[in-house]
Image 1 (tube, one colour):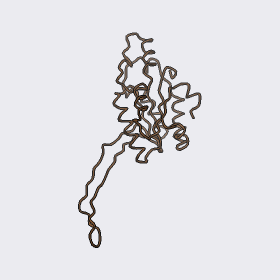
Image 2 (image 1 turned 45 degrees about the vertical axis):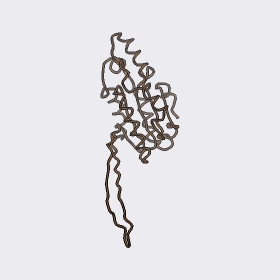
Image 3 (image 1 turned 90 degrees about the horizontal axis):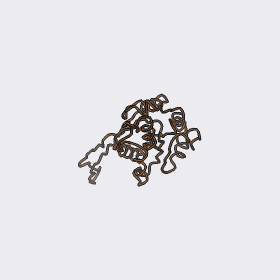
Image 4 (image 1 turned 90 degrees about the vertical axis):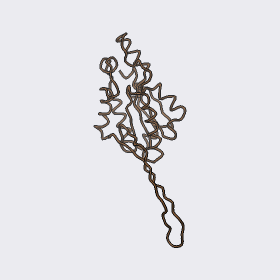
Length: 205
């Protein structure tokens, strides 16, 4: 599903044939993602050596490339209304009613029926939040597939240390990365939602 020019530069992981489903159900969005990944470059100094959090230039460039193609940040809420209807002679009577609302899920980028998050060097708790959002959006019939762009920590950590033996970049294991999300996907945290992971690695530099 992914051309060699992109496949060779990232580590990929998918569940439930996500790449094939993405191309078949949302071809324009699939093309957007391939173009963004193919055109994206990682700078050794700016992205690998200099410290920076989730809102670093790396994440900003990826999000900016998607948003220039019409992707938008989005939130999603679920409201549930319940009522008790008494069956009486004539018309039914509503005895009582109630309404509950879940917290809003925030997704970095949404277009068509695809949700895409960029998780670069953020707290690893974001992964549980993202996977929960994907499950809810998919089960509610809002999206067909989800995409996450993250990093292969071991690769980039080795590169940072090669450039600067004192570097603390990628030093903590409590950040969003391929190594953290893989066991979550393998144990089924994404439930029925097809999920495609593209991970920035040494080959992306």
